[in-house]
Image (cartoon, rainbow, N blue to C red; front, top):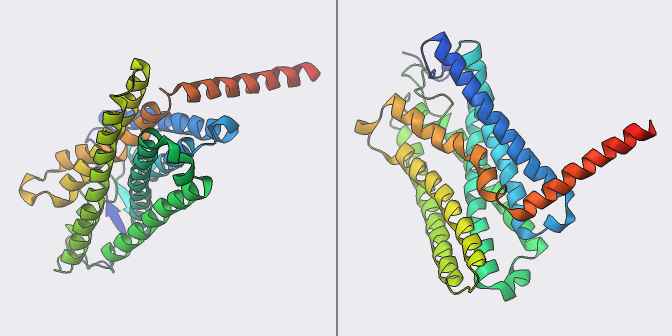
Length: 317
């Protein structure tokens, strides 16, 4: 028996029990991580460089890429390092920092996705009011609200989780520090307080999902009246993937924190956690930007500009 005051480290769940599979996990996560860095980094650079992309939609995309980079960088490098060095250890403070940062980025991203739904709803269903409802100041305030809400949400849950007495060891059935797994180590009924806060968070997130669904329905109704088939295809390809991403966060969050203990297993929890922690940051650039012609054109201009500068600098030297 131990308590939280004597715990100096946690033991994370390894992806495999053989050296070969651990190395396979390392290379797989390295590929996903590099893809996320490249995709989101290109989006951030392109939007910041091209003045034509300084619009509300691309401003929110830039924020989304920043949050994606933050969330995947919080957990994947540590998991890769553990697999490479064949260890499962994370310090107590490191675990608290990882939990706080990941919960911060993931919470802020969910609220930002809701704001992005509002942006597309106004642009398509109320285009005459777009400049009024989504001016530069309003966009900054909404993005700041998403970041601030994520910060406060993460601070509340981290402080509450690590104030619980832990007396069921220090082994977590997860490859990163997750609230649901830390709660399993508590032997006090005080864990019900954090469980209640998690239920409240899910209940707060559900109206956001309903709003996203409502926005998509209104957008689809509007685009069905568009005579241009290309315009309808663009609206459909924007709305449906966005709804899929939001649905992924809601479904995995409900499964992780509200599922009955009878259907819980380490392998199932591992699979679900990968779906909401690793997959979205890697595929979001493809969903939101790399299929966007304006992003592609701006990226080509950026690459051409960099290439020409290199050629001229080499010629002058």
